[in-house]
Image (tube, rainbow, N blue to C red):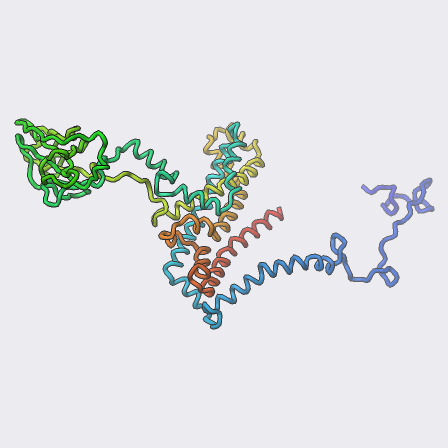
Length: 473
């Protein structure tokens, strides 16, 4: 409805230009475009009232810096990738052909693909789990602080930490210390690692590292099992003098001992004074490939098998001679890449958790409560409501981590030892090795840099488009 108090609004207007009895409203003069207005037609100011050339002048230092630090290096890298190692001969795309035919570089490409798929997925999944679970505990803030704390550590420091964590020696490496402790809890180590029979002995090597007699045992006759290969200093301090086993008519008996005494004055296959008994050695009676009886040597080295062992071969299983368990070779050729990815996840799971927790704080609680009222379980609420609502945040975390792992260098270079560095190789490390780390081929290094740029660009374009779509909402 038009306001009658405004001139020209459609109400009755008096002779004085307003309503009868009302003062006329003075007209507000508008901007006049003309020769005498002081403003040139067609010249517009920006929204902030600043002329475009002034804005460009203020942006010029930033543009120069951006060009010097970003545009020029990219352009020169593309240019340099078309020349040979010395840079004095144009080779076209030959360097790119080298990248896709060299075995070491192809290993780096494969490892980069593993990194891009595994590391962001695991870090994001852990971050999601941590963010959801810590919402329901009192000490959630303290837990988040602990999980996020590795982000305050540089890649260099984290690499040094995990190089020590993955040490093969259990006395130095935390990972193997835990593995060895668990292993030794359920499996006892052999007291005589490295023990073996004499070359001319009746015992011969058999499958699985065990030793089996060529002859068969019989009752009433001693079946002695002499061993060598154990330094006297490695014997238990409680080791006793070996004693010949007394023959028994209803059992197979014998002695297991170290057939050597200091000075080497003893006779082979004879229990001489000063030769020590090997207690705790397992002896098996094997017939037709099956174990029919077993016994363990006593403190004086003697053992006794039941009469049914007669006619069977005697076997000393490999468990008697296995060396001390030293854990897992985390930095070996097979596990070096998963181990380094584990250290990366340790660092970046906290980053994912913080971003996801921020997104989780904006999820409407009414939806979650309504789903529970309707009978949905916690897993259904999590899978069908929480995760879909957090999808934009999860995408942000995944994309950020994907860009980050494409240029991973520090952790691989520091954690992977020299003998397995080629197995853990990634493109960023190969770029360094090809250009400065002994390869001295800046052409191939530049080609790898261009490939890395091409791999990052699709992820960046996807992220930019996603941000624009969100900005238009």
